[in-house]
Image (cartoon, rainbow, N blue to C red):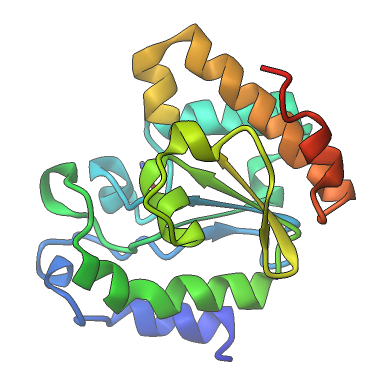
Amino acid sequence: MPSLVALEREARGCVACPLASSRSNVVFGVGDPRARIMFVGEGPGREEDLAGEPFVGRSGQLLNRLITEELGMRRSECYIANVVKCRPPGNRDPEPAEVAACHHFLSGQLAEIGPRVVITLGNFASRSLLRTSEGITKLRGRVHPFGDAALVPTFHPAAALRGGGAVLAQMRADFVRAKLALGDPSGSAGQALGGSD
Ligand code: URA
């Protein structure tokens, strides 16, 4: 398995799908390469494309707040990445061929970092990693086995920014689930919270 540094170098020169032609920057991922918690979003938005860093816009600010308030951690202690590393124009969902072309970057990040807990942000990332067509409303609220790790699906922060308090409260409960799963990646501690919201 190539190192994170080698993968990032490869991603920076990647032209394997049409997203390469409209990107300003490759948004590979950021954070601690030894992180115990890894977040996976869908793909860079406009601000992320310009900055070359995931979750730097309003969604990112909310994510940072939840990391601090619910996990008691700093953003820099986690690792943050997306399913696709280049911005889909107009913030559309990535196409299956784009996800396939980018897949080895995310699987390489997961393998190299080896997080204990993966938190997927939103429908797209949750479905992609769990390989299901089930929606986020059904997937969230429990801990899913994911190789040696636990996967905790939650809403995308943009959904909480649009949907307000109820969505945010569910996200907070999912972050608490993730924190419990950190101590118990088999998920039984997180499962115990299954019906709490
Ligand atoms: N939304 C995402 O899914 N990823 C980002 O990096 C920013 C917004």
